[in-house]
Length: 199
Image (cartoon, rainbow, N blue to C red; front, side, top):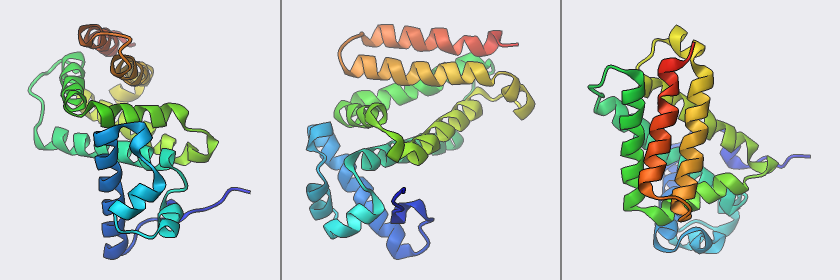
């Protein structure tokens, strides 16, 4: 039987929203300072001034926590995209510009970026709902960034998915030291070019 936790339900009250915000901020700060291993449930509870049992009701594990932080970061990127519209007209150019913005943010905070991507990599079925939410948000962000009309975006959805996969894998490869920044950016540009060639 799947265990339900409080975060599965919509956060309804201002107090709940504020508590969840403290938890996510504390998690991000710990990951930023010490990476994936620095995020421990007891430390998150203490730094966010939340009882440990309450934290577990919101997030059953550190993987749930870090995937939620990733979702939160993507929401911020999506908001930035809407506040600072892209000037490029070509969908591929728009996507490249957007993902370069994302890479700049990750370069400023590589430990947090690696912690979030490792959590996404390690996520099992218990985190399926949260991972699906991240996947949907990433796809929506890429579609918005491309500037494609809804019908055209539907036709090019496979290319969008390939771009999403490439973004995640190249980011993880670069953060792990397995590829250079130039290689990661070149791979991203190659993948983004698919959206212009898609049927």
